[in-house]
Length: 132
Image (cartoon, rainbow, N blue to C red):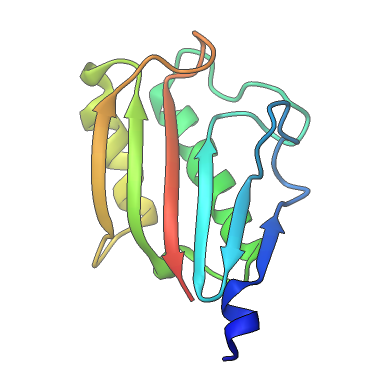
């Protein structure tokens, strides 16, 4: 791979996710690395999926992460680091049950923190980094 290709910055998006309202890119690919911005439980129509339900929201968030990765030619198997932001730490166990379905073996490195999210109805936000 040439130096030019390593430094080329490609914005990643997907028709399967909500178009960002904030000045962010859903994902960036630079060389062999993909960074997926924090995804929340909005579908492509800007509708909240799973109001009040951490299981449904986690599933939608991970589907959104998966869609951005696919736009960059990657899969969840390429993910090396994840950060999970939870509004309520009491949701940790349920979030993990869903998370385990998406990363059933050899899960990526991960941090999980309690955070105030952009909107009060968001229970979880997840960002990821992948190597392709």
